[in-house]
Length: 283
Image (cartoon, rainbow, N blue to C red):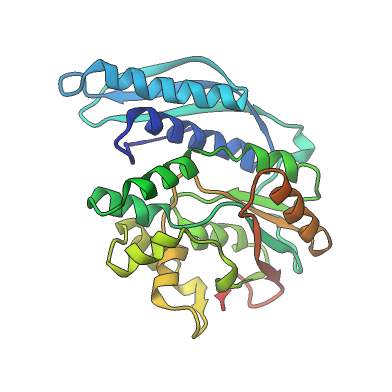
């Protein structure tokens, strides 16, 4: 289950993004989403009901794209608009993917670029161009369905989707209790180009600072990783990509299949190491 307040002005695209975000948790566990229920909080006295219709239509269209059936939902009157979904998916019990099965020597693959939190902050500040808004909106509304279908053909050890805790925050969840450490190649991590520009101008969401503070003791940066790139790594994402952990000997094949299968920005960004235990080093 996942829901949130609007992050874009267009109600139809807000519905699309919220639906894609909710479906992502099932994809990250290797499952196939099958049914969903709407979750709505709506300020009846302040907004026209036509806005809610557009939001829900956006969600329905995204569910149809995913092959998911809407079976109902629940709404409450709320002074702050909220929308999301409760999703049910299917998977064989022996094939459930979690965050907790890292193996030393594994490679880490990221399927979407980072920077949506920073760009959304710039959008709220009125700085982002219509072209940037359109591009990041489509990115957030993009399902992780293709990535999930392709990775199901490989011996994936662990997987998660990148959302509010940022890349480092979600990696921290994976590495805790694993007995391993993680090394990331900062120059290989895909980033939406405008995110660096907006970060330099100070459009850093509050969540990025909280993420950094919470995981500071687990993270070490090399001299070549500047403050802007560090901000990107802690940037809270909305409907981000999958982070997939696979054995080294199949990692290149998985990336190749992802790229040819419609996930063009999939890339190996790092690896799992024996030591330092429960630490994330970015070089």
